[in-house]
Amino acid sequence: MDDDAQKLGTRIDDLPVLGDSSQLFNLINEYKVNLAVVAITGKRSSWLTNNLIMVSWDECRLIDMPTFYEFLTGKLPTDHISDDWIFDWSVNSRKIYYIRLKRLIDLTLAAAFLIIASPLMLVVPLLIKLDSEGPIFFMQERLGQKGKPFKIIKFRTMYQGSENNGPVWTDYNDPRITRVGKIVRKLRLDELPQLLNILRAEMSFIGPRPLAHTIYMDNIRFYNYRNLVKPGITGWAQVMFPEGLSIDTTQEKLKYDLYYIKNIGFMLDLAILLKTVRTVIFGKGR
Image (cartoon, rainbow, N blue to C red):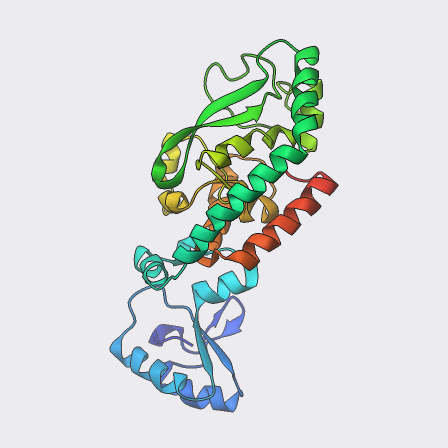
């Protein structure tokens, strides 16, 4: 349905435009509609708003397109939301108590995993030193919560000097990755030292992937909202869109990161952990 008179009687994406908002109530009853999606990207007219209010008090449920989109896909449509839309769910969010609990969970799990993984924390460095020259750890500046920079700690999986000229996207079969590095990456063992980042309150187990700042990121709309929460070892974008990092995939991953921030909670974090275990077992993603 559309209030643009020129669209009436035409077809959009092979779907007929049945009428305008003045016919909304009658058409809903005629077609026995119980859910109507309001896909208005601009400002709603008072006439349309009044008709929608009348419908909302009937048996038909109204839902805006971004909310319907995230329900279907598990991500936010960044091309169809605004800062005002983000503001509305931000001020109405009651996540502060879970965020405090999340920090306690992070500390407990990080300490427990350090104890459990202590044999690997000894074996992996030995294999790295035997396989290639260079330091055991790879440290690089990344952006944390509120844009605060920190040094991320990983086991080195590339040959020494691979990023002397700055960070470069990792590709499949990247020749910079060592023999041991391929195995360590496959099993996600290179992430183990990030437990120290968690203990230092720089990271969380779950959150947006910590990325180095690049110029083009300043030009991606809503990208700064990734920094509302701490970055994580794993996250919604990593398990739902396990493609390698590149300029083309960053925008798509952002949609998943924003979905996570909007819906942050225990059940979502638990789902991510379970999906991460599956991803590690089947060796998907990078």
